[in-house]
Image 1 (tube, rainbow, N blue to C red):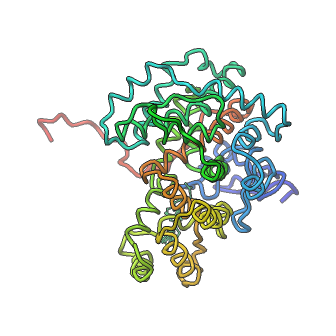
Image 2: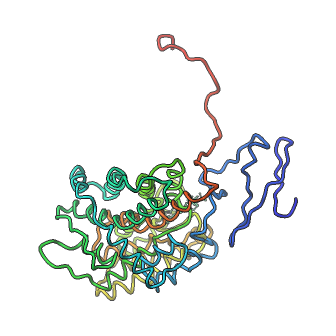
Length: 428
Ligand code: CMC
């Protein structure tokens, strides 16, 4: 095998395939010519061995439990930066200067209002609609309201659409919540921070002034940072796949929201807190550990395990510490936190979880904090979607600008009937 290449042979057709190295991480074998050379496809359901794109945004080392955004460790960003700074970083490759951050925050703030007609759109939903159902619908509908930013060939329109999406997500999520509890929508207020504004739109009422609690604001901002991007996860890959056909950005992000909703992905934060509440007391933990290990029981420990992390999810580490601190600073206590801590302790020493390298993930502790802030569990995944929109638009922009980008079109291993003749219904 020549250096920098991998020899792959099949059906008597051996050939060298280029091996490409990233700045860090495993090499990739470029098999784009494999089918042309051998007539065979690769088979990789769930993409466990497949890099679908080149990207310079986020790097994960799952064995070491490392997560970097544009090279910066997630714990440093979570402890020292703000969500607006991270959004700028993900979109623009570098951390902003103070002036750049001011300008970016100003631009995002000026896009927070929704077209007024969209409020009537909400009224078409049942009051008990899941906020994620509303998010899918309303974000998809943005393409019907902002025609001047749907030309994906125009970089300026792409950036305006990106700013609009980041800016409007808090408004859309807060309105979904307000609608579900029958309170009037609260319009954005420009002198508040991105996160403070979201809290006011969610928990404020027109009848009185709302004062943003700085402890809650900081906790929420940290949660947003920790959810901002995560490389080529299922929803991001969905956004890229939808975008690869040339679909407009609002439609692509709506597709990402739909994918995120599932309990194996973003829906796990809601499922994790529901599970902790169901367990209710540390005495019941063994019962649930036994269920998680039972092959005949579909139950899984929600908030545990990850496709990429075979070590502690670094986001869970930050959130685990934050949960204790935030609750203490808010003067609240929650028995669920004790259940979570004990469950983690038991799972981390149980041979089943140790052997399978199952550690708490980002969704394990986030719910405890969100619940203390006052969000119902149904809002948890909507908050994930709000934050992940930053990553989705950064990845979507990177994809559109990539000269190697092609429409995503996987192949298959066909196992259906071979060709046969149609038989009219009266002769079947
Ligand atoms: N509880 C019990 N067993 C588990 C769990 C769990 N949470 N997660 C994985 N396993 C077992 C699984 O049964 C399998 O065992 P075996 O090899 O004997 O068949 C083994 O571990 C590998 O699991 P897998 O399903 O093949 O792994 P995957 O990489 O396809 O799935 C996952 C990853 C996150 C979907 C899975 O760990 C899971 O369902 N976790 C619970 C849901 C969750 O917390 N999701 C949030 C992920 S992080 C945030 C996000 O990405 O949105």
